[in-house]
Length: 420
Image (cartoon, rainbow, N blue to C red; front, side, top):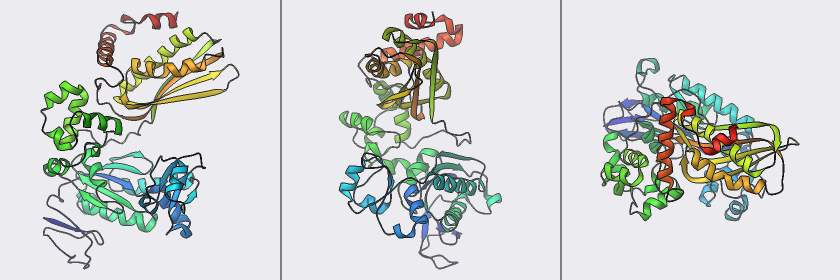
């Protein structure tokens, strides 16, 4: 067993109850602490923490960061969370749950400045820092002991104190052997937390958790799994991987891996892509709904191709139109789980386009965007409608043919019309 003092970073190979150097009882114990090197850091209630830092009068009050009464909660402090307030909650519901809350508008410049300062601190530990949002990121500290003069756990403990003292907010840290388990660990002990999960203990730790506990299993997919009898992560662990693949296709393999704590994704330093999109500007304005549908198919195909190239999928699909008067409008739909398929994009936004073409409006541009991205997990069966798997297989086969024989080797009738 290893003990880490979170007040002075002393590391001892023994199970201590107080630090042998400073006497602190703020210790973290783990039997494999000396070898875990993949970390996830998450700023605690980041926006609200910055607001409280910059306005001490808010320190002991419930704080909600967001818009007006018709807006939604961007984030809230932990005091407000005790009253049931949550991110993305409609503001009127949040204020009903916590009438005494102080609502503040987002201070985006302050958030960006603090985020850059935090990133600089993390990059001083390792060049392998992957920020996935303004307030969280992954680190790979493998082989950094000599540079930092400490094992990864102690180096992270030190930087957490520096961020708290110099930037004025707290962070929670998860440490493991892969990104999924590091992310999971960081959520176990918040705020100002430190937790670790080794691969050897992952299955036992995950087994009793509800299926929705797995990062990447959204509410809709969780309900679907529960209806199929998978109420806990352990229920998934007990099923053979081939059976999961048989039920859910490639998503079944992903589910098996996450339920067993397996994640082979590296920590990479390229910036996270927020969306993929494609748009077309017409040579002449178009009002004909049928022609606009054909143009819609083209941008759906282009967007899908880019998503597949980057190995990502998204849950929010956005239709973009620009009128002949150069007025832009956007309409969005959110799916229960991610997709990268052109057919799914098209079928999801076509009803949105139909509503915007009923009045004979002329448009000079059409576009489709895919956001709320994540690593592609494969095609989930029966997600959109009973025939989605068949269409997905056909589209994948077309992709392979085009890759081998060229783009023009496989074209739909709609695509031929749109390009004519």
